Length: 204
Ligand code: MD3
Ligand code: FE
Image (tube, rainbow, N blue to C red):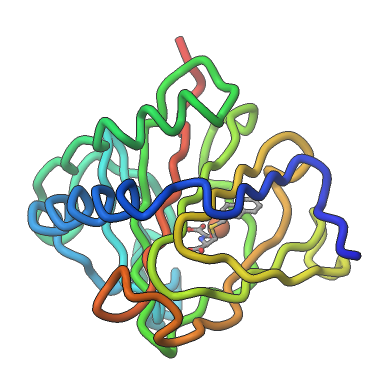
């Protein structure tokens, strides 16, 4: 049997169909205000296969020149990010165990062939807060390891409505998305959306 790294909580099917549909509608509004864009790797400028946008006071962005960072505006429109939908604030209060609100919600959109290489999330100043992930649409094969790149990893499938909470010792674990399983959900016309709620700065 697979053992998750300490601090990882996987809540399969946490969101019911109605909640998933409501969340997709809320994300449609976010994407209307803040269009998905193609992020580029620092230094090389190599495009990522995942398209991204954000909501919240801060958004995670990356480009060739300035690399990974959080900023208050969309890199293409220059507009502030739209607010985090209330239902995501409620979810954070319900599952995060953290007393301050999230500042960023990164929206990742995966087509059939998109993936995300093994990486750590370390662009935040506050590691005491967990990262809360919401999966919508097609299933994916998710991989999580330890805090060193060459630590052994385990893989599991994430499905629409699943929540993963990465807190405590797992907050700095390497993780990635190896593949999408096309047409495994009918929630979206195509593809997978992952939302990650994050506290970026230390609370006052
Ligand atoms: C494990 N996203 O946006 S979410 C990311 O499915 C990211 O789009 C993936 O990795 C996705 O940075 C995975 C689950 C997740 C998020 C943060 C983590 C797993 C994590 C931080 C530490 C360990
Ligand atoms: Fe990540």
